[in-house]
Image 1 (cartoon, rainbow, N blue to C red):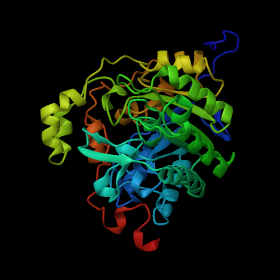
Image 2 (tube, rainbow, N blue to C red; image 1 turned 180 degrees about the vertical axis):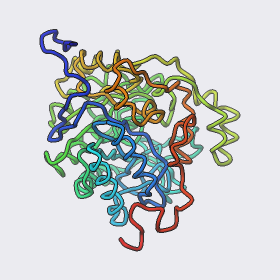
Image 3 (cartoon, rainbow, N blue to C red; image 1 turned 120 degrees about the vertical axis):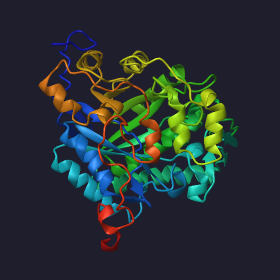
Image 4 (cartoon, helix red, strand yellow; image 1 turned 60 degrees about the vertical axis):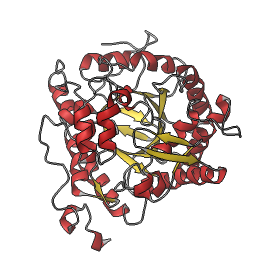
Length: 418
């Protein structure tokens, strides 16, 4: 049996039940949020339901639906689900289907900010300060205080709607230089008002968002914050600032668990994933002129980083030592050895993405064989598939964009019955 970081209390078995806020999970494994690319016209398709049911059948304690924008202008793709009356029946169908398989289900909520897609949203992307997004080849404008207050309030409304839709938890996106994370970053945030400058000011948006969510839902569902430890760029948000922000969130009482992440969808997308950067695959799914840009300068924007199991563990340990909140370890969770180390280091849960894309029943296999290792080879060719239906390209899960989309049978709940 492993022991906890104190050396006194036995560490829990990763396959034993665990609690986040008011929610008990059947085990301590979580399907991490990976944008599925399986919504259509803002509605839940049957493909999206099947995507998450596969992980529930495969044994995870909880699966995370990503990415559910808190408002229309926060979407990073024009087809993404956001919290409209029309989307709610499909979301209810999704949560009911996951619950029927014995798993919990979390809604990742957030606003894309400078990562949002202005053309599809027919609204400007919003950042702390004006900037150009070289990866998406568009620009964002500086958010006004009214914009900030509107987006903060929208997080609370989204969390309330998540309860209506039957979700067990919300995962609030404070990472990857989306809206809240862009304010945290000293590289992206050049404001001189109360939302810029020193760390306390730059952390105001994140803290106000979490306060809005807690005020809206109380303790009816679990509240998880997904926050960067490292933007992966010089002059960006880093551990020395992530530690006090995590402590402030804990002191505010707005968070039930922390999931630490890294990288910037705006500035350095591959930093989170480690492994290969499949430039040809990315170029192949991009529209012009982005396709040409990827071919010309993709090697500068989409970099490769060496992969190792548990690659975020060392940094996350420093957050773990600074707070008492339950924590979820993300990054390179591929085998029981890494999971047991996480439990021994005081983490309450582990979150997996690529390993489960490769083998949706990985947790069930692990329960049957503790020596099981993920078949994922970290080629990262799954990443470009989120434009066509997220999947491991080495297997055929038959949940890519369905030929029935646009027809009643393509949706979890046919549009005409809403």
